[in-house]
Image (cartoon, rainbow, N blue to C red; front, side):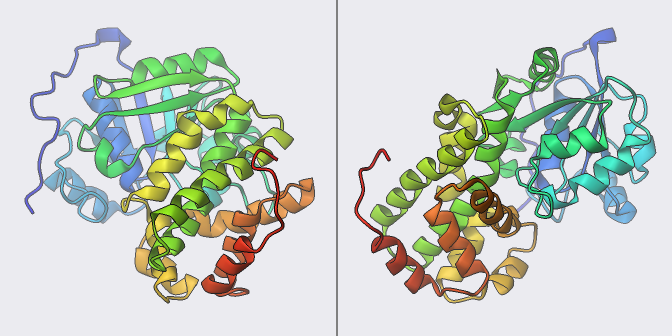
Length: 349
C-alpha cells in the first residue's frame, strides 16, 4: 500500500511568536503520530530517536517505515538522535517511551531540561520495581518540570490518519494542562483537562492488563458475552484500586477510564489485545510478546498491579488470573474456570 498524506489540505496556522518549541522523545508509533499532529498545529517540533539511520530514512522518505508505514509525515518535522539537543530550550517535552524505561530516559533528559518546562508523558504503566506511577517517577527524575499525563482512547495509527479522537490532559498544575490543551488540540483531536492524576494514571496502566485478558478470551473464542463481562467487571477492579489510592470515582467513567478500556480491549490495533489473542490461541506469553514486535505494556504492568493490589489489599481477580496466565502458573482454560467459579456476590460490591 502506498503511503498517504492524511493531513493534505489541512491548513497549518501561522502562530508567529505564539509558536512553541516542542520535543518528542521516542520515534515509535505514538511519538511519531503526536509529533506529526503537533507540527500541523503550527508548532516547531523535533522528534528524538536513538537510531540515527532510521531517523535519516524518515527525514528522506517522510515515512516511519517500521511503525507507521502507511502515512506520510510533515516535511516540517526535525529529527535528532542527540537527547540533549532535543530537550534544550523547549517549551514542551513529550515523552513517548515505554513505562519501564521512563525513569532512565527522563533522568538522562533532566540534565538538559530547564526549570518550568512542561513535560507531557504518553506512557501508561506502573513501574515494576517501585510500584510507582509515572508522575511519581517524574517527581524524582525531573522535579524541575511541570508534569502532564496525556491519556485516553488514542491509537497512533488513527491519530496519524487525522481521525477524530478525544483525550485527557491531566495535571496537578491546571495551567500546564491548559497549555497542553491549547497546543495539542486540533479540529480532529479534542482534549479535556483533568486534575485527577491518580485516576488517569491507574486507569491507563491497568486497562492494558485487561486488554490482554479480553484478547485471551477472544483467542479462545469464548464469545462477545464473555468479552463484555470481562470488560465490565474489570471497570470495578480498576476503580477499586484507584479509589484506594485516592482517585476520583468519576474519572473511571470518562475518556481515560472506560473510553481507553473500550478501545484497547475491543480493537485489533491494540498490541495488548493482539498479545492476548495469540495466548488464547495457544502461544506462550513470551512467544506472543515477541511476535507482537513492539512493547506490550500490559505484560510488564501485570506484575506491578499484582504487587500493588496485594500491598493495598485490593481484590482484582481478573488482573490476578491474567498475571497467572502470563507467568505460566495457569493455563487460560483453568483461569476461566477459576473466574467463573468464584463465590456469589452482589454486582456493586
